[in-house]
Length: 378
Ligand SMILES: Cc1cc2nc3c(=O)[nH]c(=O)nc-3n(C[C@H](O)[C@H](O)[C@H](O)COP(=O)(O)OP(=O)(O)OC[C@H]3O[C@@H](n4cnc5c(N)ncnc54)[C@H](O)[C@@H]3O)c2cc1C
Figure 1 (tube, rainbow, N blue to C red):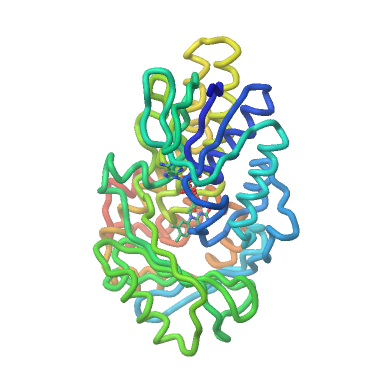
Figure 2: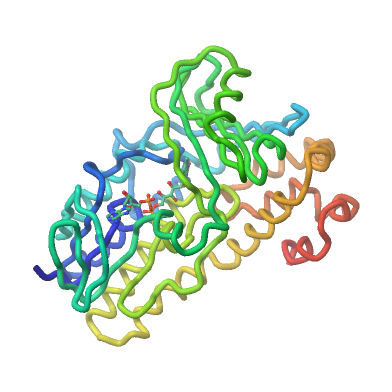
């Protein structure tokens, strides 16, 4: 069997990449090891409408769940503030449906998708799956964080997310809770799917995520659990080389999820789009420079923002609960209003700088780490 390109991983990055390649008239096969595209759904489903538009996806009615209107951010001491996030145009979507919608786009353009088929190894002429050998010119690794686990464990955190029914979940209102003792280096989150239902999640360095999430839920009140998922997240930013010979690495497998939140629908998805375009060009010209355009295009778009997000992450990993509490105390209603006016969901370090009060208050900056902060401001 021969395809111009074989993509391992039938999720957002792999399917978008296949869509681009097929739309340029090349043969492409997507193999997905799970039994269904879009499952198991390991995602909060938060994405900006602008991001979806850029990915070339107008969500179907089934995909679109609801608009997010506000975000409540809570400090370890319980102090909190709420940002009006209407301008961000963030939606909560069903990942199960989004992935199927992109699979449909890819298939209509001519891609072939096979589930319950797993990539095993690269061969001299292509790849081998659990079923057969397939020849190809290019192999695309879109296997998500699982692909990074063997390369570098230091950028991986454990996460858990439960889908629950609870009357304390309010439609449209996302919650983010910081506590360096309970969720070191990350945070807990509540993402509503509707009134009374949503997803509660947590990630952190060295914690038992199941026990931690159970404690959050106990404190919150009555609830029923509908689904539990446990998945690693990658927070270390892009890997060094996206293209190695005839292997192209995309999406979470290339570290393209945001270092601050590990959100990757847009940034990993764009990795798939840029790679698909570059691979198509390469298949026309056979010039390997065309293949390398993929890394350049992704880095031009996201490189500097990801560097700043990595610095913001380093700061979060170093500060303690006391410092976070103090930072929250220094957040004024004016700062909250200014952030509410922003529409930077996908490029949000500007808002982080504002929230930290760094530009206005060098004192706050001194309690943190001078050198890294300067770079964050630069
Ligand atoms: C708990 C949690 C919540 C999240 N919430 C959000 C959010 O709200 N917003 C957001 O933007 N992002 C969120 N993310 C991140 C987002 O899910 C990822 O960035 C995104 O799914 C990355 O897409 P991908 O295609 O690169 O990889 P993945 O979605 O991880 O897909 C990889 C695919 O490869 C398949 N695969 C693996 N090995 C093989 C193999 N050997 N052969 C064939 N197939 C294989 C897998 O089954 C999977 O389908 C969240 C992540 C987690 C864990």
